[in-house]
Image (cartoon, helix red, strand yellow):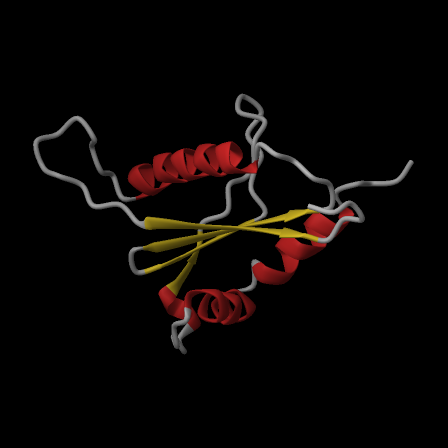
Length: 123
């Protein structure tokens, strides 16, 4: 049985390294960061109750770059991107102990969502 996720796993492993992650962040965002310590890997892990994970999520300052690798066409990728972003914000808020029910306005990172498709069908 062929593992349909092997390319996606390889993609995620490749860009989950801080140095390579920063390189792809700079390339797609038009930035020139040089210190990998500025990069936070914010990729969602597969949670049983959500059954969702994204391939790569990279956070620098207030920009969240989310990358998805697809080998099949899925017309619902914009909706999935929105769900990934919402789930990422849950983790962002929890990690920083921010309370959305408090009286102080919380600033959150701007999302940038890319789907990289390499399938055989015309998209």
